[in-house]
Image 1 (cartoon, rainbow, N blue to C red):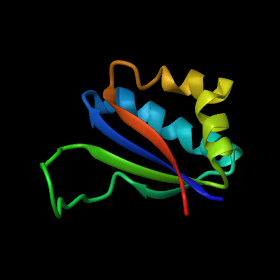
Image 2: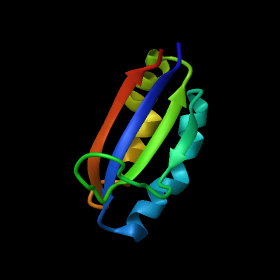
Image 3: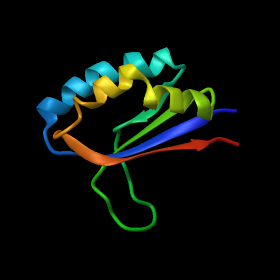
Image 4: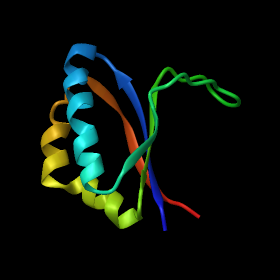
Length: 95
């Protein structure tokens, strides 16, 4: 069953964050993931307004999403985000 990773990110340093953006797609694909949405225009239809970058990634399963996140490759790339952005990343099983 497919699973989705949802990230809400507040970018503080775009120059540094760009390095993270350049490296991450390769590792996501390595674990079977693909971007559904990646920082496009966001419209709040209901609820509190947020100024975050929203990313949605589909993986073949929740297990694959966890493998990607905890992988040695992603943990190395994740350090590129340190100091450049903050936020939350969740994984949810599809239906």
